[in-house]
Image 1 (cartoon, rainbow, N blue to C red):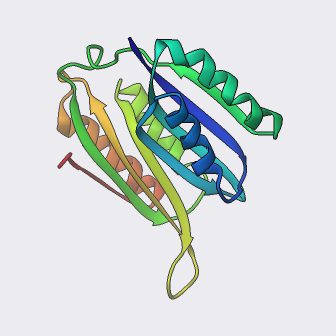
Image 2: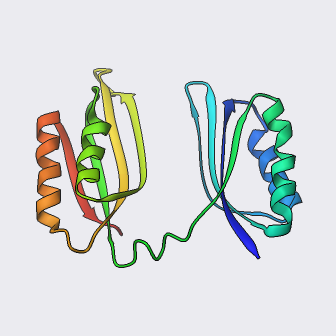
Length: 175
């Protein structure tokens, strides 16, 4: 019986790291179902959803010991079936843009949490504006909203929070 596992790895960036980790998956008959990887401040972060057979799970964990010995933080976590938990919930895209400053992620995520809205994915970035060099913040995410919540109430309130933060907030249906 296959297991779905979330693998996380963080540590110093090095050429060939993704090749090494994925070769361990292939060696154990595993498959990377989805992943996100990024270099953040000189460190590398890897997040993968991996399917591997019950028989190979312990062997995969053992294979990853070498990376732990090299100073990488590696975790394996078996997933639960969340499809049933969020059945009937509605997906929406959220995009936030504006001048970067402290608290944007917190204020947006706090509002979502207090409404009972689940964050499915969120990517954020800060980069210098082309002409002025002012740090510009961007956030793109997908959320799952309970069907009983009124769209206009939670999304209008989110846009008001954006106004107080001096950022643009757009909410739309996932395409």
